Length: 293
Image (tube, rainbow, N blue to C red; front, side, top):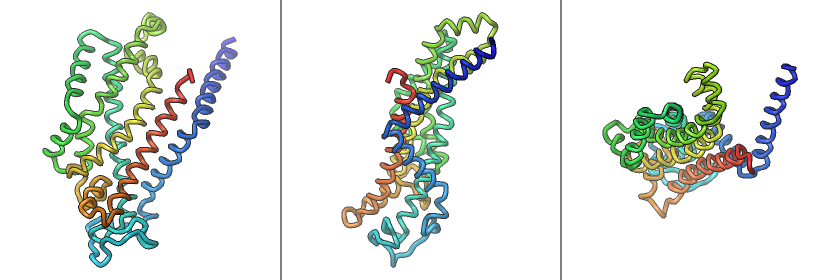
């Protein structure tokens, strides 16, 4: 009988997984978003092999080729220093993905753990974490990031630090709301009476109920992190030149508008492309985990 029940449980899990995948695969926006992100990852990983001028990511100057319009040799044209914008844009996508991995790789686990602890234990722990979260949320994100970036040298690592200092708060508040609701369920009390410890309840009973909201929130946040990082670079507080960054490329090209429009439009379109992919994928994941739809 135990084997029959185990098989039934496995069948239900497979059926549930299949239904979620069916909803995801039947969502055109989700499929398009996935294809966009796969193309971005492919370009970022193999950038040194597929870009025509990989040396142009450094301090290369060729004034004879400056401000060339898009053609067969330079698909996105060249910038004020004669560097290939297509090559620098592809490497800029790599910087954007590294920023997403660095920021969300830290802020999501930190925010999730703090939210779980606050929602489950309550009391003074809940008050302290909620108070800290509210204080951090009261600070304007861009102003805080600019202040941190102004104190530190403009590098990719410092840009990650500036954004991560604030980004964990939204995840903490979201997971707190979910864990607070789940902590009052009967099966949590049953697990506690059965002798399960706090760590088991937090990470084996409550956390699985938060996977769906964490997945959707993280995917949508990736787009905001890219826009936030591009904003810092645009204002001169992001990645240090001559390393190619999409925000700094737009900032450098705007002084030559509208004559050399490609210097702004091409890296700007790259920002639009990758953020659109993350947003479409996030909408697809939301529909996939939404059982009511």
